[in-house]
Image (tube, rainbow, N blue to C red):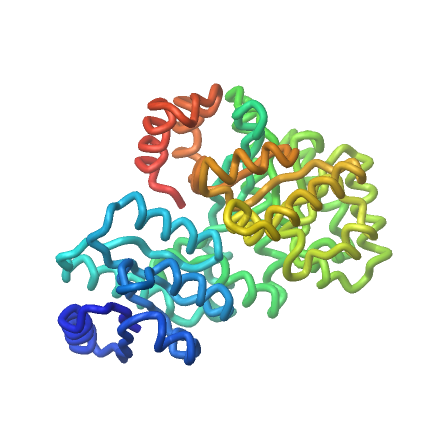
Length: 399
């Protein structure tokens, strides 16, 4: 889908991509899409930032309310700061923002991005995942967590990445669901846990003393030998429970609640932190918070994205933080994209945050370089030192 109020640009981009064999639809702006949002259910949207009376931001909001998540390339001749703000907002909404191309159009650059996307959209099968497991193609990237009061790095979240020789970089939303359905989430989780524990051991030896959050699926938690397997790996890597947070995903997927309560209570008693992920949306609900022995609550990025523009989102954040305080839980905000969001979360009493405002996920070697330069003592994010740090992060080739 090409959305641009300039008919010449629509024709140019459409002809360029149709010659490559792609099916093309075009729209002049927001008005014609509001009545037929299903037209946006495509693999790729090429979106002009300025659309007459509306902007690309309005189309991004329409996508969010329609629960449609295509990949998006922004075209623009506007100020880069404004356009990058639209990119970050799209990412905060969970959209696949591929980047920005400035006008006049760089046709070779557009074709490169489209070909990369085409490769990444090849169907992921159980066989692909099985082969990737056998060849150890799954990796971890680490996104820093920051204390909102002191500005210091206090931990990282270990996030799954798949770099395949044929498929390219496969995003988690394309392989996790497949692995969940066919049971391969269990060997995948153990492979990633091994990597995380080994990395935590190396960082502790190097003086990088940070909490590490590891994601756990209910399917893994419910296996008969989960606890002995997990504790055996912990001992083998000489990692202490106090240095780990276990983030439980898809809590409504728990089939045996009594067993889950028993397992998680044992882990908490051993000194692990237990987090409920994406609280307030999807499968993370008040019932799970009440029934399971959590020590940490993560505010979903959807509320954080709107908190400075929407009073309801701000009120929900304040309510969640107050609820966590009454329950004795730490609070982490996901998807912090702007300084204003960070300030609001801090005022609300949120303990810590993570998001692109601070850093994207980084592979271990890039994280170590970043942490060695800036992470040990975070500079003032509002002055020139913040901009220096941000440029360094961009050079670290985020995962």
